[in-house]
Image 1 (cartoon, rainbow, N blue to C red):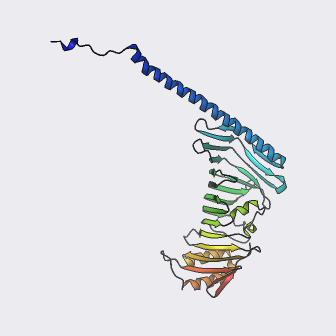
Image 2 (cartoon, rainbow, N blue to C red; image 1 turned 45 degrees about the vertical axis):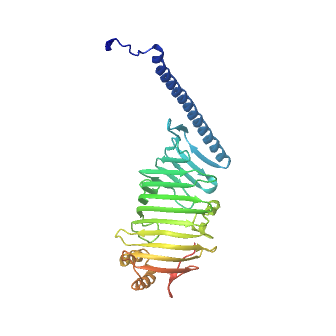
Image 3 (cartoon, rainbow, N blue to C red; image 1 turned 30 degrees about the vertical axis):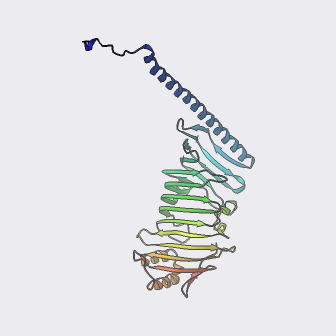
Length: 345
């Protein structure tokens, strides 16, 4: 018999030991090469970004626009690529428009380079045509842009605790808003615009002889030909002339919870007159009517007429009266009852 301890067992040879070590070296070497290539690619993109910013700023200057991005530099290595500036500004003397603010930071994830997120620090100085010089400060101001051709597909701007005041030392705030968000979504030729704000308080002198309460509101509006707005030079509501669309949601609330919601299709004629079929829902009609009458006392008769009509109006699921209001060339009516006229845009 052969003793079990005397049997020949497999033994490790130098060749079998070297194979896994060689594979490990190849793996580490490959990772190092990939890291070097990735790093070189990232810094190449960074240099291209800085060069593009300098080229664009020079192009704006040739058009008479003073765009500023002080100490522009790429940032975000290794997982993002973005641009940082110590100070940003935009000045168009031809339009009497100037905006300057603090530092600016933007970045895009390398796995999603078409979406750019940015943060801008205050305070900001604003010189706008038709307004007194303004200063603005905020607790937070961010934006997100989804790039596309020829224009961005989505733009979102978020603000928190924004305060706007005159530039004179010690000037009282003109407007204060707890939070707000503005969204643009484009799908040529349609454009969707949504806005929301919370605890907006305007100074009493913003509208002469009017004391305005604190407001919270939201709007979601679809414009059938919203892309056409981008080529217009108007800076007021006349820009909407010739447009049509749908008010998916327009809602305004006062501090006591009373408020109004409006939905429905509309169109704006070239003379600014509005035509549309709207459903208007009032929460706490008496409280809403009192608040509106305090703001616009001359509209007392119209408000009283609407309140009388509400007694016969159908109710929504929450018990709030809902009125169908027709508007034809600015003239408003509930059934056969005329309730006033909307001003032209």
